[in-house]
Amino acid sequence: MTNARKRGGIRFPITRIVTALGAVAAFVVLWGAVALQGTPEQPEATLPVAVPPAPAVQNGPANAVAAAPTTAPVQRVAPARRSRSS
Amino acid sequence: MSNRVFWGTLLAVEIGIVVVGGIVVGAGGHAAWYASRAAGFAAYFSLWIALAGGLLMSSAWFDGIVARARLLAIHQTAGLVGLGFAAGHALVLLLDSYIGYSVVDLLVPFAASHERTLTGLGVVTLYLTALVTLSFWVRTAIGMRVWRMVHYLSVVAFLGAAWHGMQMGTSADFGWGRAVYLITTLSLVTATVVRAVYVRPTRRTAKAAGGVSAG
Image (cartoon, rainbow over all chains, first blue to last red; front, side):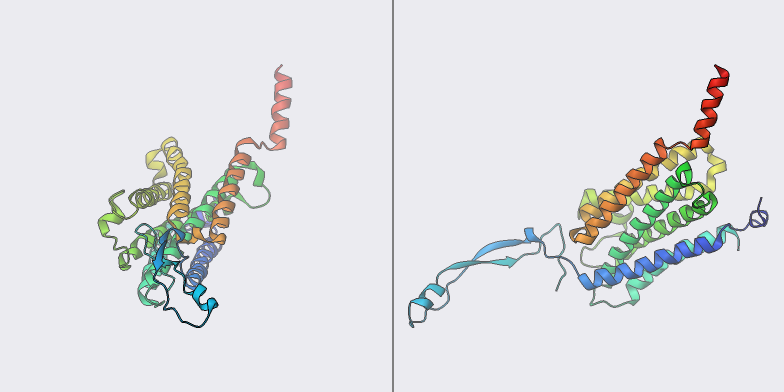
């Protein structure tokens, strides 16, 4: 039986402290990483919604094409996943 | 410092770091949310270290590289630290108003309305981790056989934590998050296989010699 055991103390205290400090350091690094990255955009949260055509400008055929109706993704908050990237 | 004081202090410090960090540190109003995510990942990582340490400790393959007593120290500490971070991961969510978890949601499995199954799995995993980790200190009271059965639940707890993290954790949406889950899970599968099939060469020789002399 080691001296530490005889005294009712802990064995390998340095190893234990290093392990605990390593976990705390990992926590701090992870906190920084997730705070920097934010949260990803949720692909299922985008739905195509019709956008009204832009006002036509009578300047030529190029602008007439640009004024055609189109669709664009609009962000919606999905109920199951969260998006906090802003 | 006595054993109980050391472990009690360690557990309290881990939980305190997460909760106080979530309160004090301002990160654009999302401090609690970021603290919870980081604590969840740190808990998962600590549980992986604990489980890997336990498997390597009980396997002859690692003999001579790291002393078993030192691996036991890492195994115990990582388990307790993981429990502290897991508890902090849940507690700090009470400070986050986005989902609005209540105490009941976080204490009673499958009571939460948000992601009922996955949240409930997380709560069950937390209880299993607490049971496995704290059972070491009542080993003599419950007996080795019961303790060993309880200890096998650590595999269930780890798988529960992995599934909870992969399905619900925001970090799993990133490449590095998926890589962490993949590497940790595969490494544990490898360690389990090594633990199950590896026999120390000297022991095998001695058995063979015994078999020959007996025959």
